[in-house]
Length: 166
Image (tube, rainbow, N blue to C red; front, side, top):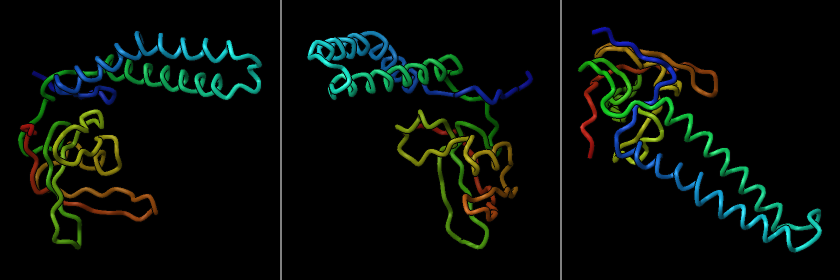
């Protein structure tokens, strides 16, 4: 079987998928009804140009609609279950241990979507500078990435194992 990884695929646990789906269902159903009622109530207060409640409700409506679009995109591109992974190779869904060049301290984190933020360990996105640099690397390999200040940082992959959950 050939393993392919699309850049737009988000691997989610069933728990994370269910949580996001529930949020989407609420926002696109009862959430929209609630905000429409707030807007209507504020509209009835009179002059819309000087109606702070109306403008606040419209802003809240925009945030809700934005989150609905974000959730729809995530769920459309989501794959539920275990990401295809190989022991010792860094990829989404892997618990990764690295060391920074010139520092003896080790850092362990889950390489996954930020939507998995319920994990009991730190979560780094595969799209972050560090995540992108180490994705696909094997244990023992080094990777460099650019820091926000423009300097380069090098890390060594010490371990990459499938995430086992809490």
